[in-house]
Length: 533
Ligand code: NAD
Image (tube, rainbow, N blue to C red; front, side, top):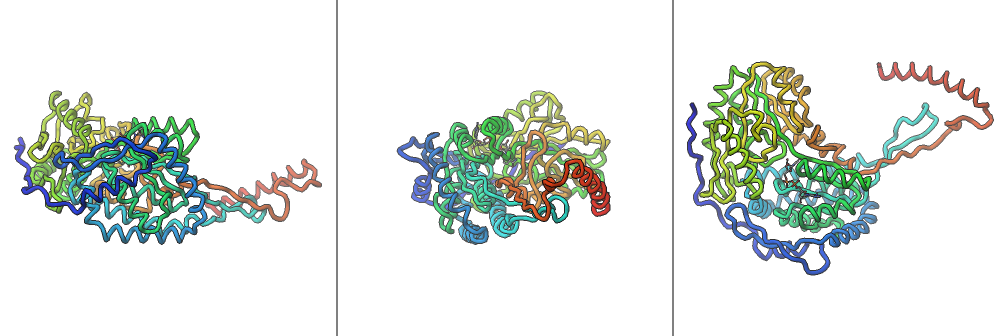
């Protein structure tokens, strides 16, 4: 029996932030709207205090923002990608320079710990550097094979799609205002971003910084509001990049399907961690804590179910509980706190409901399990459950909070079946000292990213490799070439040379057919030799 102890609390909770009400008011005035609009007051999850107020756009504002963005995009498409890159690299430098201000603001909006806000900031700088330096090469027209050797000269051109609508959630507001807009802008598009209302100020701060670095003002617009405003954006943009829940993904895909516009959907997950018998247990425990409790579990790739081999289950569980109970919780603007608050009431309610439902149906709480109103209205303890069964909500539904379930396994085949028996397939984590086996097992897990001996950051930070979901976890990919190419229309341009591809007009069709048939037979052998198949 493992005792549940008290998590440490940090006192005094926080210091004065490096932003002022005047700054927030200046940011609020940057929202794209035409006329007076009602304002929505935003509260800090740290303590429920008023943060500021933002005007909420009407659907007409969204149409107008898209129209303006479209005009600005026509000029931007003609700008050399290397010039675009220089703007993004300046953005990279300014972002790092002004980090204290934006870290404070992001923390106040989300309630997250400093370390989680810092993770966002560093990731955003990496994205800026990555797409600024890679896109010019990737966007250059590319020679392709064409038809029979020498018969055509063929190129692939990449054109911008036009106006990209970005719709994002509240959990990583800094990353969301950067990691979709930057590749879209680098590809020559305009962007209209609709952040979640709770985290509008962070998005506006990023937009202001981009303008300061030389990005034309109307090229990157921000519209505010909830589902209705999001739907208006899907109704008028040329491409939609949504990050959000799977039910919202389905609605957006339906609406985009009607308009035949492209979408990329980064959706939910119920991400597994698999601890094999030969894993380095201490590292696996640290990985589990980071994977399950980073950003208070409000992370699409966070680990919500952990399968541990029976031979190491006891030892793993004991260390995991010990270390979890030693986590420091609190609302601080420095690095003392290891886990912050949940961000929105809706998420807090879901977390509480999942834990209560599991406990009512017989699950055991090994650590945490309780709200912490003494720390702030939306604080919830990092929670470890065992004895979780399929009739409990937490078994298969995404919790999106600091709650992880432990399962013991003995047979690898059976556990892989259990892991893959999920509607989701976003991220997974495998722990073993045998790296070859780790890769074999990883390749059998139905997930867009699998980390070996790491929880999520190894794959996420591999910027050159695509990131996204199998099954109901999404469509399309961010990061890598695919993260850029989704924002382009690809065009093939082919020049005919020497003789007509469809045969000279003087050649009887029967002869043409016989000549091409013979050529195809030779060609097949040549290509087989060349490609070794
Ligand atoms: P949500 O789906 O409720 O909202 C996401 C965004 O979509 C918000 O801006 C919201 O206003 C907007 N929206 C809602 N309904 C809409 C509609 N009908 N049309 C257009 N826009 C609409 O998600 P949430 O609860 O804010 O965020 C949490 C979810 O996001 C979780 O499921 C999490 O897994 C997912 N997420 C996924 C990733 C990823 O990369 N896969 C990253 C972060 C979060």
